[in-house]
Length: 234
Image (cartoon, rainbow, N blue to C red; front, side, top):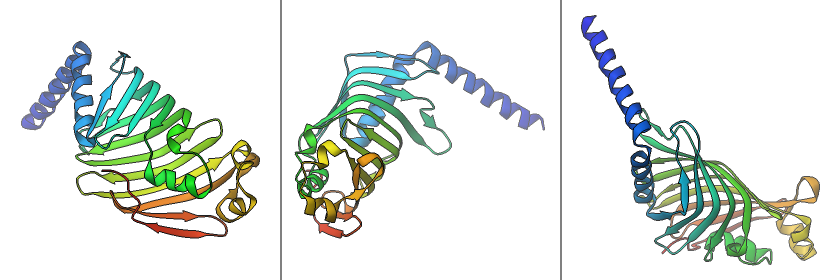
């Protein structure tokens, strides 16, 4: 029994020390956190300013995320919410909320969807608000509860990517406002898009298989289209 209490006491003291270090050196904790994310996802992260707290959201301004494949994501504001890690699962958490988020460079999979319904490149779109819950474990990334909301386009869904294993499993729903669908031909709308609430129309997209050359499935009320070997990354 004494040994049990000794172990509990030691763990409690260790936890207090960790919390104290986090309170005294939040910048160090932040740097370790960001370096782990960059290494796991093979990306570079930069920002103009930040506000870091132990218990509140971390706020970054003018964020730029660049991948080795050349994809660039910009956000005016990015908020990361605690908890930031799970000791039991060995996972790093990124519960985020981004404002005015945009993409640069073509995104082959998503652009394929846009081309089918005669829309401009996805890289020209900015979202007013993007929320997601992300979990990182080694080279595996799970994105859940994705909500990307723009003036005329919304995206909802989930994604699992194994960077080292080279696999992707993604389910997305795209919604388009009347401003967008009015410029799409009637035949395309009937065949490819489904009617949603408030005059919006949508399409379900599934991406699976090899990360660099996955299989793309498009589903609507009248169509189940399967496209193989669309490039994702270099």
